[in-house]
Length: 515
Image 1 (cartoon, rainbow, N blue to C red):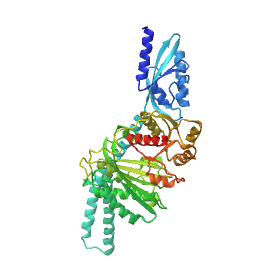
Image 2: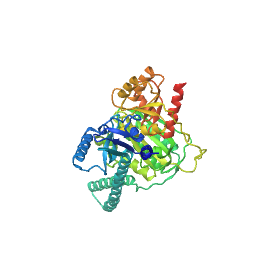
Image 3: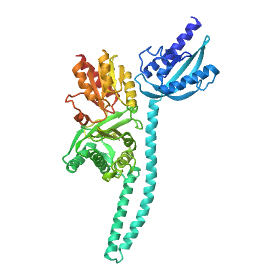
Image 4: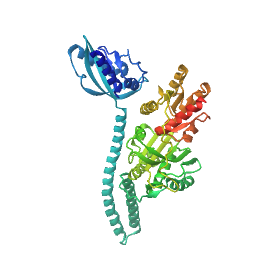
């Protein structure tokens, strides 16, 4: 065996084994070799990158900067990008951009130069850093708030004590009334600081093993009487869930705060849904929801079909005193108290919202190891542990959120499916009319453009009845579908979803469509 053959085989083995993208280009930027990871990262079929220019893998501004660096290097040997790494943006074939770490090396081939680029996708790391930053910011605010509240309580103790002592003296009627009002105001300040202490996770909790469903049913009876007839309250509780260790009174208060927040987002009435189920958070789940310890959780979802929240409002929703309802006497403490209570209870809270479609909060509490009633924690959770793999079927993924689209691609490929990507319902419909081999459409419901996921599914069912359809949403299914024009019913997978549940639903739909 010749040395050239050995070197070629070794290079091919390295390219195939690498989990990062490796792209080899000539001195004018044309790609002459790329590994499987590169094709997958940028959304090309195997071999589809060959002949492209490396500029096709970058946004225009970065491509121009890269070309200028390479030109200066080739002319004068300026090596600002050779042998060093830097963070840049890559561009997927679909047009979306994503963060990358790029390092470039050079090799000589006769009188010509070859450049080897190694690219590492930073999407997950960026998402983790953002989640960690958000948690650290709220923790810092909590520590500061806790310290201020403690000192303020000491001041209020002195103020109230002196006012009460003054009230023991003989006073005229007006002065007595002034003292009474001052004491009432000081007590209101004391109540305010106690609520801030809950956000700071320094409130006094009395946790006990509890059944979330039992507490929710009692609280919902109260809410039905107080919210009014313009608000429809529904519940969907999984039977026989594990118990959790929480303070029942504070949990009931959290439910009321979430319900009041939903009511304010639905000034003309609306629908409110409470769902309880039990899930396992594992590594696949962690790709979507960071800052959550793996394990078994009981989850409460509270969804409404109200006005929804802007991205900025979502980012700051749990900060104390942040409110979009200042004109309605909003204090900005309701969601902060819910956040503090859930975190102090060892749990986690998520927020999903889009303007015009509503909001959904997820409260996750660690399940106790002891079963509740006839519950047996040794039983496998739904979905079962066996993962249904695909057999090379083609799935059209339709998702407008870049981060969700990225992780959904990875999850579907890991299950053995071929993927076509669309950014919205309109482009998905064009792809379907130009492509013959789509077996299943997996689409978000809430999307920009003239076709939301429900509209797209309705058109597919009429023109392409053999294509299976699975919709997904961060909202409770009967809340979001109530706002859709179509009366047709489709399978809906609730976000965030477990990898095993995604696999099971896809396999079941594909079996049905092939019968």
